[in-house]
Image (cartoon, rainbow, N blue to C red; front, side, top):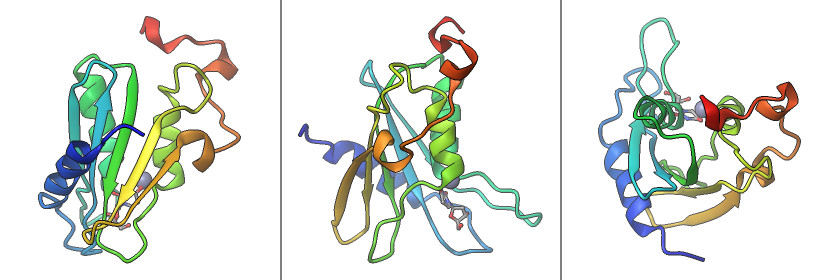
Amino acid sequence: MKDYSKLILEAKKAREKSYSPYSKYKVGAALLAKNGKIYAGTNIENAIYRGTHAEKFALDTAVFNSEREFEAIAIVSAGEDPARPCGQCLQDLTEFDIDGRGSLIVIVANLKGKIITFTLAELLPQRFGPKNLGIDVKKY
Ligand code: THU
Ligand code: ZN
């Protein structure tokens, strides 16, 4: 397995920028595009409880910067058991599951250095995605 320590460090740094006065649960994410660029994100909450998740922030930033193909995402949280991305974030990531195989590497880590690695397919085995609609997202 490739060394994703830089990606995890970027997610950890992003976590420190969290705005989460309601849950006080900080999450950081760092998404690695296939071209090597990293896009970070954190959770941003608000008083109507319709905040942004760290993974979605990172993904939206990357897509805004014309990225469509991704290798890995690291997510850092503080609990004993590192938080996995929620179902909605897994669905958001599925939008760019280019090969339809769920090969995106999803690394979850905590502040104590516990790291667990999955693939998108492991976390969301039966995915509804662009392929169901016959869409090749690379074209958009
Ligand atoms: N959170 C994320 O940033 N990503 C997830 O996928 C799970 C939850 C955030 C949302 C909220 O700000 C806090 O964690 C507690 O749910
Ligand atoms: Zn989420």
